[in-house]
Length: 324
Figure 1 (cartoon, rainbow, N blue to C red):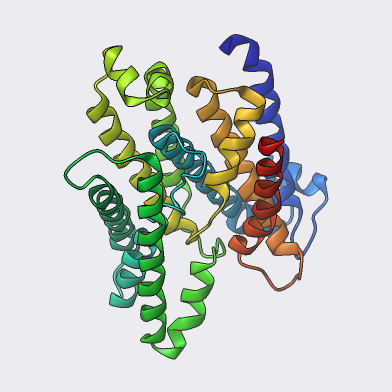
Figure 2 (cartoon, rainbow, N blue to C red):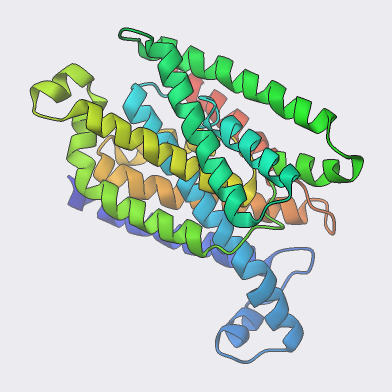
């Protein structure tokens, strides 16, 4: 079954490369394809080298890695909760990471500590949600999802408080970052490294995730160490969300709609669904960031605005199809 889907996965990889190429070509100043070829072969004008190698290529790579991380985190949360509405944004992981990252920014610490704070906030939010939902006993997926929505609302209130009490000169950058901003994204090396390592870790565990998606009791009956796998998913989802928030701010809908779309194309086997989600999530965010750069060029829109504008109608369409 997996081998039969490999051609589709390869086609998706080709689409991802095409979208990344478009991200290099399009912007406030459009470039011809020949300029990309010249720069990548060590030629080209200094202006084109600066524009492509120093500005657009790092941004495109950062956008792709961030979209891939968010899509994988959403797919993992949906496996864990067996609920198609689960994703880091809805469950409050993004909110917890954003609050911690904003506090670190206000403290004036470096990028490393901002990343560490985001990871701690996402991890804290994860255990807060699951601790409140489970309490002293078992909790249904619906209760867990509702708890996540409430916690996410609480993080939203704290974000509003931080914005209201911040200095006026700090507000524009913080607001733009909260709506999703890749214009000041750090080096894409760490997001790409985490993306590759996580995929290499998860693909061999695909069968285990497939069993867990059918239910905890059935997974336990088949010999799966459910608690250990769940804790691993919690930690990975928090890590992926934290890195994504640190790179691009708080971006919604990628982790929600991408796994849905990939299940329609590739089915439910996590061995093929996870890499497909990474490719599609990365492509979606690169496309959204490209649109954010060209819609009102030379000004730029927050990329989170574009993902929401794309995500809302797609998700409503998916709900309509499922209800037919």
